Image 1: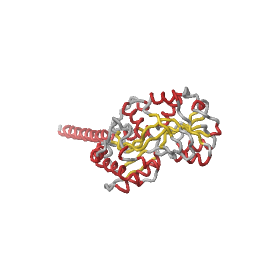
Image 2 (image 1 turned 60 degrees about the vertical axis):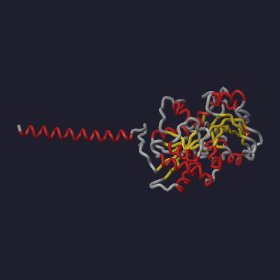
Image 3 (image 1 turned 90 degrees about the horizontal axis):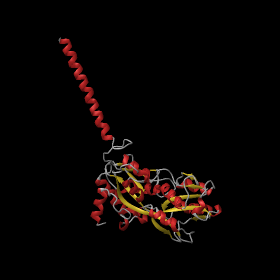
Image 4 (image 1 turned 45 degrees about the vertical axis):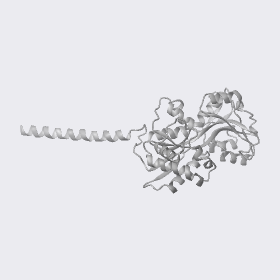
Length: 337
């Protein structure tokens, strides 16, 4: 009898320990499951900034912003690593999942994310907020004079770079081509980043490249320097209106002189590039420091688009999008509305 009692006691104790261990394991998994990719929700000081492809503006701007912050923010354990990515869509998704803490994206893409439309249909995005509006960027449809392409309508049957997967460029490219009656399958699509697209256009692998970039774009200038025959195609008439009516883009003109070699205006559409941050992983205090430094020290950066990061336009294109509490604290303090 005594032996049976001892056995039952040991059995109960063992089962209790197993259940306790499972409970602790469950707690750990729950705290780490704030995302599909297992990202943690705790605030961090070692941050990852998602940018875009090499050859675009997001990538070098991200590098310069990271350096600016590291040179000016004195917080224990603070660091920012800027990484190449697929740009807007990927950056928003990875901030939401906890894999990135910061990212650059178009306001049009964040609007889609908040409204669960487009690439984000049926996906809840509730952890991504605006830290600052950066600069306007335009859709550029570039080709070479030697291709014989005169308008966007001529891209039917051609080889066209439409941007990498996970970026807003692809969505814009498909929208514009559709406005000209060019559907998927009517052209050969190349999912290229800006740098690779430039090289392929230069060597004749592709006929045209559609990009959403800050204007002027250094990669476009480099292409002109090497070929002397860059042509930017306009989005015109009913097609332009269709794009504007079916997106968050606005009509925009790239004026002569924007590039030294550009003699005529180019009609296109524009969106705003935004700096975004995680509401969970970027604390209010750190977001405040990031915003303050970016607004007040942007002149220390060398990239051309940094000159467009100004106090009077730091909320341009934000509208009703969620703003990070730390950024809002700085805007309130500085009287920015």
